[in-house]
Amino acid sequence: MRKICGENIIIAHGVENIDFTKVITLNESAAFIWNQVADKDFTEQDMVEALLSEYEVEKPKAEADVKALVASWKEAGLVD
Image (cartoon, rainbow, N blue to C red; front, side, top):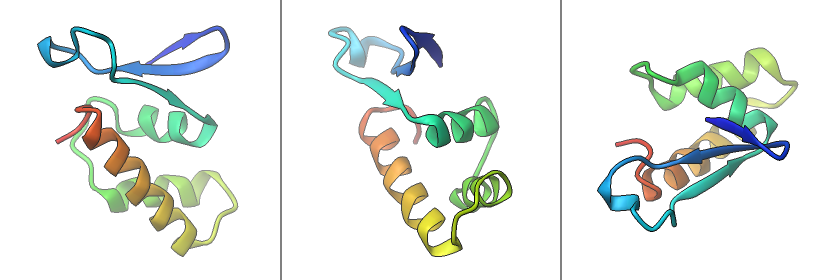
């Protein structure tokens, strides 16, 4: 993740992103989660727990947000 012009940016690596179409901008909470799980094996539950420990959010909302976030990361090729 890089901070560019005040935005948290992730770009998928490799040949599949040679045209740079898989650029993801992360909001504050998504960037927090990314930093918590970067370079680690993690589960969606790990991500939910990280959100719950850092932010005042209800568990069902955190679970829904994590599910959506993981789906977007998978679509961009950032995670398997």
